[in-house]
Image (tube, rainbow, N blue to C red):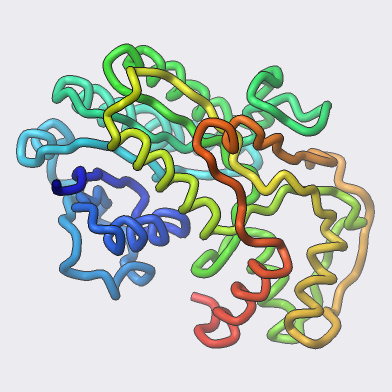
Length: 309
Protein backbone atom coordinates (compact mmCIF):
# COMPACT_ATOMS: atom_id res chain seq x y z
CA UNK A 1 0.00 0.00 0.00
CA UNK A 2 1.47 3.35 -1.05
CA UNK A 3 1.95 6.06 1.54
CA UNK A 4 -0.11 9.27 1.44
CA UNK A 5 0.90 12.38 -0.45
CA UNK A 6 1.85 15.25 1.84
CA UNK A 7 1.70 18.92 0.92
CA UNK A 8 4.33 20.84 2.90
CA UNK A 9 4.70 24.58 3.34
CA UNK A 10 7.87 26.09 4.78
CA UNK A 11 10.07 23.36 3.30
CA UNK A 12 12.87 25.80 2.50
CA UNK A 13 13.04 27.01 6.11
CA UNK A 14 14.84 25.62 9.13
CA UNK A 15 12.22 23.20 10.48
CA UNK A 16 10.53 22.44 7.18
CA UNK A 17 13.77 21.38 5.49
CA UNK A 18 14.39 18.74 8.14
CA UNK A 19 10.80 17.51 7.91
CA UNK A 20 10.96 17.33 4.11
CA UNK A 21 14.02 15.10 4.32
CA UNK A 22 12.35 12.80 6.86
CA UNK A 23 9.18 12.49 4.78
CA UNK A 24 11.18 11.57 1.68
CA UNK A 25 13.33 9.09 3.59
CA UNK A 26 10.21 7.36 4.91
CA UNK A 27 8.66 6.99 1.47
CA UNK A 28 6.06 9.75 1.37
CA UNK A 29 5.35 11.65 -1.84
CA UNK A 30 5.78 15.33 -1.05
CA UNK A 31 4.43 18.44 -2.76
CA UNK A 32 6.24 21.60 -1.67
CA UNK A 33 4.77 25.09 -1.81
CA UNK A 34 7.41 27.81 -2.07
CA UNK A 35 7.75 31.43 -3.11
CA UNK A 36 9.77 32.83 -5.99
CA UNK A 37 12.30 34.38 -3.63
CA UNK A 38 12.71 31.28 -1.44
CA UNK A 39 16.31 30.18 -0.98
CA UNK A 40 16.80 26.47 -1.61
CA UNK A 41 20.19 26.00 0.08
CA UNK A 42 18.75 23.88 2.91
CA UNK A 43 17.11 21.39 0.52
CA UNK A 44 19.33 21.48 -2.58
CA UNK A 45 20.56 17.94 -1.82
CA UNK A 46 16.94 16.74 -2.15
CA UNK A 47 16.41 18.14 -5.66
CA UNK A 48 14.32 15.86 -7.87
CA UNK A 49 12.82 13.96 -4.93
CA UNK A 50 9.72 16.14 -4.46
CA UNK A 51 7.30 18.20 -6.52
CA UNK A 52 7.38 21.96 -6.14
CA UNK A 53 4.95 24.78 -6.89
CA UNK A 54 5.63 28.51 -6.76
CA UNK A 55 2.63 30.11 -5.05
CA UNK A 56 3.61 33.50 -6.46
CA UNK A 57 2.88 32.06 -9.91
CA UNK A 58 0.20 29.39 -9.39
CA UNK A 59 -2.96 29.68 -7.32
CA UNK A 60 -3.60 27.38 -4.37
CA UNK A 61 -6.86 26.14 -5.88
CA UNK A 62 -5.12 25.18 -9.14
CA UNK A 63 -2.45 23.27 -7.24
CA UNK A 64 -5.12 21.22 -5.49
CA UNK A 65 -6.71 20.56 -8.88
CA UNK A 66 -3.40 19.21 -10.21
CA UNK A 67 -2.44 17.10 -7.18
CA UNK A 68 -4.22 14.52 -5.03
CA UNK A 69 -3.25 15.59 -1.52
CA UNK A 70 -3.93 13.46 1.56
CA UNK A 71 -2.30 15.49 4.34
CA UNK A 72 -1.21 19.13 4.64
CA UNK A 73 1.62 20.17 6.96
CA UNK A 74 1.81 23.92 7.41
CA UNK A 75 5.20 25.12 8.68
CA UNK A 76 5.65 28.35 6.71
CA UNK A 77 5.54 31.46 8.87
CA UNK A 78 6.59 35.07 9.11
CA UNK A 79 8.08 35.30 12.60
CA UNK A 80 8.72 38.49 14.51
CA UNK A 81 9.22 38.25 18.25
CA UNK A 82 8.61 41.93 18.85
CA UNK A 83 5.84 43.92 17.21
CA UNK A 84 6.51 46.18 14.27
CA UNK A 85 3.55 48.18 13.06
CA UNK A 86 5.03 48.38 9.58
CA UNK A 87 4.66 44.61 9.06
CA UNK A 88 1.05 44.04 10.10
CA UNK A 89 -0.29 43.52 6.56
CA UNK A 90 2.61 41.26 5.62
CA UNK A 91 2.18 39.11 8.74
CA UNK A 92 -1.56 38.80 8.21
CA UNK A 93 -1.00 37.76 4.59
CA UNK A 94 1.65 35.17 5.49
CA UNK A 95 0.23 33.77 8.73
CA UNK A 96 -3.53 34.01 8.19
CA UNK A 97 -4.61 34.58 4.58
CA UNK A 98 -2.14 32.19 2.93
CA UNK A 99 -2.87 29.16 5.15
CA UNK A 100 -6.60 29.97 5.09
CA UNK A 101 -6.55 29.58 1.30
CA UNK A 102 -4.79 26.24 1.72
CA UNK A 103 -7.20 24.80 4.29
CA UNK A 104 -10.23 25.95 2.28
CA UNK A 105 -8.91 24.26 -0.87
CA UNK A 106 -7.93 21.18 1.14
CA UNK A 107 -11.36 20.96 2.75
CA UNK A 108 -13.10 21.11 -0.62
CA UNK A 109 -10.95 18.19 -1.79
CA UNK A 110 -11.69 16.09 1.30
CA UNK A 111 -8.15 15.57 2.60
CA UNK A 112 -7.49 13.32 5.61
CA UNK A 113 -5.72 15.77 7.86
CA UNK A 114 -4.06 19.13 8.44
CA UNK A 115 -1.05 19.58 10.73
CA UNK A 116 -0.48 23.17 11.79
CA UNK A 117 2.35 24.97 13.57
CA UNK A 118 1.64 27.37 16.42
CA UNK A 119 3.70 28.91 19.21
CA UNK A 120 3.91 28.93 22.99
CA UNK A 121 3.68 32.73 22.75
CA UNK A 122 -0.08 32.18 22.46
CA UNK A 123 -0.26 31.27 26.16
CA UNK A 124 -0.36 33.14 29.44
CA UNK A 125 3.03 32.00 30.76
CA UNK A 126 2.59 33.34 34.28
CA UNK A 127 2.23 29.77 35.61
CA UNK A 128 4.51 26.86 34.79
CA UNK A 129 4.67 24.34 33.28
CA UNK A 130 2.39 25.31 30.40
CA UNK A 131 -0.17 22.70 29.39
CA UNK A 132 -2.83 22.84 26.67
CA UNK A 133 -5.48 24.10 29.10
CA UNK A 134 -3.41 27.16 30.04
CA UNK A 135 -5.20 30.45 29.42
CA UNK A 136 -4.61 32.21 26.12
CA UNK A 137 -2.87 35.59 26.35
CA UNK A 138 -0.83 36.25 23.20
CA UNK A 139 2.59 37.75 23.91
CA UNK A 140 2.94 39.50 20.55
CA UNK A 141 1.22 40.16 17.24
CA UNK A 142 2.85 37.06 15.78
CA UNK A 143 0.98 34.92 18.33
CA UNK A 144 -2.24 36.77 17.51
CA UNK A 145 -1.89 35.83 13.84
CA UNK A 146 -1.33 32.21 14.83
CA UNK A 147 -4.48 32.24 16.96
CA UNK A 148 -6.45 33.86 14.15
CA UNK A 149 -5.56 31.06 11.76
CA UNK A 150 -6.24 28.40 14.39
CA UNK A 151 -9.77 29.78 14.77
CA UNK A 152 -10.24 29.34 11.01
CA UNK A 153 -8.75 25.87 11.14
CA UNK A 154 -11.17 24.75 13.86
CA UNK A 155 -14.12 25.38 11.55
CA UNK A 156 -12.83 22.62 9.26
CA UNK A 157 -12.17 20.02 11.98
CA UNK A 158 -15.56 18.39 11.43
CA UNK A 159 -14.28 17.21 8.03
CA UNK A 160 -10.68 16.21 8.77
CA UNK A 161 -8.21 15.51 11.56
CA UNK A 162 -6.55 18.77 12.59
CA UNK A 163 -3.52 18.97 14.87
CA UNK A 164 -1.70 22.12 15.97
CA UNK A 165 1.76 21.85 17.50
CA UNK A 166 2.55 24.84 19.69
CA UNK A 167 6.33 24.96 19.54
CA UNK A 168 8.49 26.18 22.38
CA UNK A 169 12.13 27.07 21.51
CA UNK A 170 13.42 25.12 18.49
CA UNK A 171 17.11 24.83 17.68
CA UNK A 172 19.41 22.69 15.58
CA UNK A 173 21.36 22.41 12.37
CA UNK A 174 20.57 24.81 9.50
CA UNK A 175 19.07 27.46 11.74
CA UNK A 176 20.68 30.87 11.65
CA UNK A 177 18.27 33.26 13.31
CA UNK A 178 17.78 32.29 16.93
CA UNK A 179 19.61 32.23 20.25
CA UNK A 180 21.52 28.94 20.05
CA UNK A 181 23.12 29.46 16.61
CA UNK A 182 23.97 33.05 17.59
CA UNK A 183 25.79 31.84 20.71
CA UNK A 184 27.56 29.11 18.74
CA UNK A 185 28.63 31.56 16.03
CA UNK A 186 30.11 33.98 18.56
CA UNK A 187 31.90 31.12 20.32
CA UNK A 188 33.40 29.74 17.10
CA UNK A 189 34.47 33.15 15.83
CA UNK A 190 35.80 34.35 19.18
CA UNK A 191 33.57 37.40 19.19
CA UNK A 192 32.05 39.10 22.21
CA UNK A 193 28.36 38.50 22.83
CA UNK A 194 26.23 40.79 24.96
CA UNK A 195 23.51 39.02 26.92
CA UNK A 196 20.93 39.79 29.58
CA UNK A 197 21.60 38.62 33.12
CA UNK A 198 21.08 35.08 31.79
CA UNK A 199 18.53 33.85 34.30
CA UNK A 200 15.62 33.71 31.85
CA UNK A 201 14.60 30.06 31.33
CA UNK A 202 13.41 28.61 28.04
CA UNK A 203 12.38 25.17 26.78
CA UNK A 204 14.83 24.13 24.07
CA UNK A 205 13.51 21.47 21.70
CA UNK A 206 15.92 19.90 19.20
CA UNK A 207 14.89 19.84 15.54
CA UNK A 208 15.06 16.05 15.23
CA UNK A 209 12.65 15.68 18.14
CA UNK A 210 10.30 18.16 16.47
CA UNK A 211 10.42 16.17 13.25
CA UNK A 212 9.69 12.91 15.07
CA UNK A 213 6.57 14.46 16.66
CA UNK A 214 5.27 15.64 13.29
CA UNK A 215 5.94 12.21 11.82
CA UNK A 216 3.92 10.62 14.64
CA UNK A 217 1.01 12.90 13.72
CA UNK A 218 1.36 12.01 10.03
CA UNK A 219 1.30 8.30 10.86
CA UNK A 220 -1.77 8.71 13.07
CA UNK A 221 -3.68 10.57 10.37
CA UNK A 222 -2.52 8.11 7.71
CA UNK A 223 -3.90 5.18 9.70
CA UNK A 224 -7.45 6.38 8.98
CA UNK A 225 -8.66 4.90 12.26
CA UNK A 226 -9.50 8.17 14.01
CA UNK A 227 -12.50 10.47 13.38
CA UNK A 228 -12.23 14.18 12.51
CA UNK A 229 -10.93 16.16 15.47
CA UNK A 230 -9.10 19.28 16.57
CA UNK A 231 -6.18 18.69 18.93
CA UNK A 232 -3.51 21.06 20.23
CA UNK A 233 -0.18 19.64 21.42
CA UNK A 234 2.58 21.48 23.24
CA UNK A 235 5.89 20.57 21.65
CA UNK A 236 8.90 21.13 23.86
CA UNK A 237 11.37 19.12 25.88
CA UNK A 238 9.61 19.85 29.16
CA UNK A 239 12.94 20.96 30.66
CA UNK A 240 13.61 24.64 31.46
CA UNK A 241 17.17 25.84 30.85
CA UNK A 242 18.56 29.25 31.72
CA UNK A 243 20.53 31.27 29.17
CA UNK A 244 23.55 30.75 31.43
CA UNK A 245 22.99 26.97 31.23
CA UNK A 246 22.89 27.15 27.42
CA UNK A 247 26.06 29.26 27.23
CA UNK A 248 27.81 26.78 29.52
CA UNK A 249 26.83 23.82 27.31
CA UNK A 250 28.01 25.62 24.16
CA UNK A 251 31.34 26.44 25.83
CA UNK A 252 31.71 22.80 26.82
CA UNK A 253 31.01 21.55 23.29
CA UNK A 254 33.12 24.21 21.53
CA UNK A 255 35.96 23.57 23.97
CA UNK A 256 36.68 27.15 24.96
CA UNK A 257 35.06 29.92 27.01
CA UNK A 258 32.77 32.37 25.26
CA UNK A 259 33.63 36.06 25.35
CA UNK A 260 30.50 37.41 26.98
CA UNK A 261 29.10 40.24 29.02
CA UNK A 262 26.11 39.73 31.29
CA UNK A 263 23.70 42.63 31.54
CA UNK A 264 20.45 43.37 33.29
CA UNK A 265 17.33 41.24 33.39
CA UNK A 266 15.16 41.62 30.30
CA UNK A 267 12.05 43.69 30.94
CA UNK A 268 10.22 42.44 27.86
CA UNK A 269 10.99 38.71 27.62
CA UNK A 270 8.97 35.99 29.35
CA UNK A 271 11.11 35.06 32.41
CA UNK A 272 10.33 31.33 32.25
CA UNK A 273 8.36 29.11 29.88
CA UNK A 274 8.46 25.35 29.55
CA UNK A 275 6.02 22.77 28.25
CA UNK A 276 3.95 20.13 29.93
CA UNK A 277 4.18 17.41 27.25
CA UNK A 278 1.93 14.86 28.98
CA UNK A 279 -0.78 15.08 26.32
CA UNK A 280 1.71 14.57 23.51
CA UNK A 281 3.16 11.53 25.25
CA UNK A 282 -0.30 10.08 25.92
CA UNK A 283 -1.94 10.55 22.51
CA UNK A 284 0.96 10.42 20.04
CA UNK A 285 3.22 8.20 22.16
CA UNK A 286 6.06 10.66 21.63
CA UNK A 287 8.82 11.83 23.89
CA UNK A 288 12.05 13.71 23.16
CA UNK A 289 15.08 11.54 22.45
CA UNK A 290 17.76 14.23 22.65
CA UNK A 291 18.98 16.07 25.72
CA UNK A 292 20.21 19.64 25.36
CA UNK A 293 23.77 18.32 25.67
CA UNK A 294 23.27 15.95 22.74
CA UNK A 295 21.37 18.40 20.56
CA UNK A 296 23.78 21.27 21.09
CA UNK A 297 26.75 18.95 20.45
CA UNK A 298 25.22 17.97 17.09
CA UNK A 299 24.50 21.60 16.27
CA UNK A 300 28.01 22.76 17.16
CA UNK A 301 29.51 19.96 15.04
CA UNK A 302 27.39 21.04 12.07
CA UNK A 303 28.47 24.68 12.27
CA UNK A 304 32.10 23.75 12.81
CA UNK A 305 31.95 21.81 9.54
CA UNK A 306 29.55 23.90 7.44
CA UNK A 307 29.86 27.39 8.89
CA UNK A 308 27.00 29.87 9.15
CA UNK A 309 24.89 30.57 6.05
